[in-house]
Image (tube, rainbow, N blue to C red; front, side, top):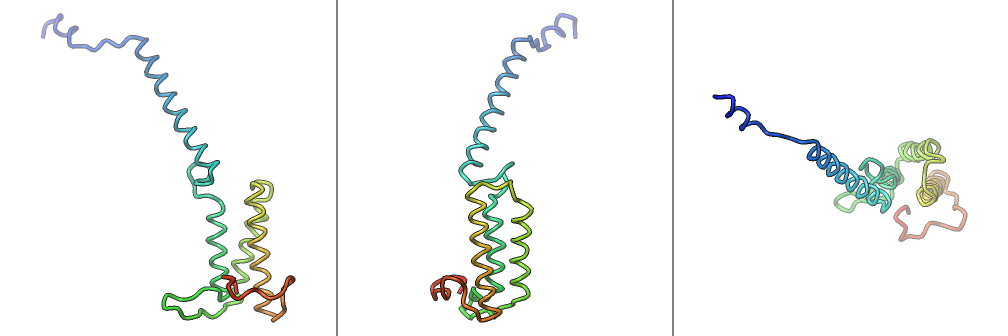
Length: 144
C-alpha cells in the first residue's frame, strides 16, 4: 500500500462531528429521563423502574388475607384461618410502615394505614370474637 492510498483510506473525524454526537447523546438521555419521570409520577413504576410501592403493600396484604381465611382455594373451598401467619404478615406491614415513615406520598401513607387498620380489625375479630368498631365486617367484604 502506498502512502497516498493509506491516507485516502483513513476516516477523518473533525471536532464538529464529535460535538454533534455528544449533543444527540445528551438529548436521548434527557428524553429517557423524562419518560422515566412521567412513569414514576403516574404510579406505573417506582424510582429506577421498580414496581410501585402499593404493589408491595397489596402483595403483603393478600398474604395476610389468605392467613385470615379471607380467600378461597382454587376449587372454591374455604381456606382455614391461620392466626399465627396472619399476625406475622400484619406485623410485616407494620414494619414496612415504620421503616418508610416520612418517605411516602400522602396517598401511599393513607392507603397503607387503611390496609393495616382493616387487617388488624379482622384479626381481632377472628381471634377474640369481638366486633370491631363500626360493627361487624359485611359478608361481601373480601376480608370477611
